[in-house]
Length: 260
Ligand code: GLP
Image (cartoon, rainbow, N blue to C red):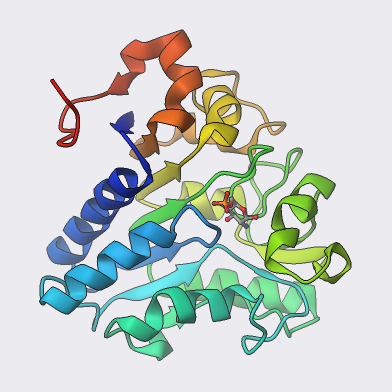
């Protein structure tokens, strides 16, 4: 089942998504949470930090697995996803660093690294709640268009569009790694719950194609239509395409900032 929740803006989207993650942690303190990087989840992490500081959340038993990591980057590199997670989230909450997992970009033996990462996810008992953003070409994690749905963690060659989109985090486009490790669609689909967030007009078209269009590897996120527990929280600009075409799919209830 897929639920699409409306949020009027980025901040409201972030709060709603953070509420869903909080509920998960409160109901199961040792949850395995799947995390994502990019601009979209930044507000979610900020909100969770705030609630942690207020004493409303305890991450001491939580385990985390991240979707992806650049091939070749060490966790001390400011562009690595390990660094991103530490700087934007982990350093400000009471999570045990030994309970936070990402693919190891410095392990250049792709087969060994992917095998190790799948093993970690398996040993943790699978993912309770996976947070996802969506790329402009419909990628989830770094599963680019055309990837087979049945793949587990693997090493990918990044699409030109992705390299372009992510160059903003680097000094120049030449510094963006051409390869990355990513959980496969199969790892993501095995998560018990999925929470997809999207913000901004730039995501409107791809979000509409992914959630209402045909299910096909050419739009990796479209596979989520087959998952039995997906919640999408998106802001008004990101939902504009869906609202135009299939407004009945969007649940506007409980948008506490909306005027009724
Ligand atoms: C990156 C990440 C994805 C992320 C996507 C969207 O390439 N690998 O996990 O969802 O881009 O990023 P943003 O949220 O910045 O638009």
